[in-house]
Length: 408
Picture (cartoon, rainbow, N blue to C red):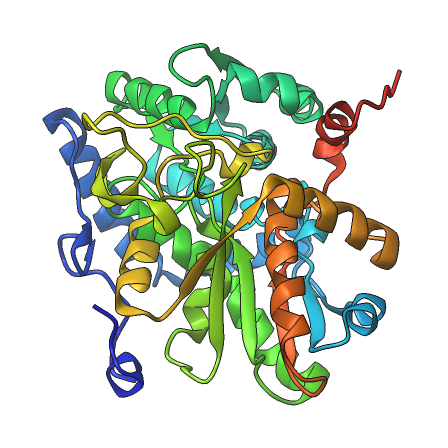
């Protein structure tokens, strides 16, 4: 049930001791993983306040990732739309091309400090896989990436990048052959190899403490926007917008602003071919609560309770669930979740490329599509910050194929 503004201001927005955000989250996993999750929880809460760990994490963000990322005024696009001033948080300029590197550095350091020589990860659009492979190479860790067979086809540049960085890429042919199945396969690997393997999860989903630790590592995005917005335009943004698949880029931007109720927050899911169809990936807009990949959250399922197949033009949003904190934020009304269709995302992809000279990831293009609608209904003295969560190099072959253009 939605809370009042006064009630929202008094919340801590932290999970309870069992990893629940309200009714969502927790640990719905086999006994085999409980000890590993307990150890991870203890190690994380010890190391997050450890001066040496934090120094190493901050140094990597500065010198390996290249933080802080700029807050860029999309001046021509703002003028063309004719409403609010639009700013992009340029996570696409990070090393490896997306926000994913913020989180993977943190988790890889946890693996190092925990004495785990092997890391595994799942990936959809490939950005998390590339980021994991890059950090593993830097730290000398063995790296295995699980990726849906369909995603391997539509994200071939990122597959090659992972292999160049020394990772083993394992195709997943089961189920929908996309992100959901890659995550399932990675969890099976972890159960089998829990003694020497650290699972670097790619989003704020999964069993506790993953939703919290992934959020905390990526919250550097929102913390930077807080001071950058004061420097660049003298106040906090009037609105924040980010795309939501599992939800890590979004929660990284949103989390530091949650107590600031004067800032409106919007999460944009993949509406695919329309929310009225079954061909989308928007559990917060059109799903219901259930358990997926070790946590209670909103998900998409069939009438008989099976996880539904999803569709999105963007591999990174093609997932039937969402992080449990997003489920909680939806229920209490702090964040409004909306959808953008394939066609709307493709239109925004082309428009921002041509008007601002920035080719966005197809995931990001969903957020841009809604930003356009939102900004058009605001005044010119208001500001919207959209998280430019990734660059679109990886998607040019997908877009060209959709539009019947040969690149050979």
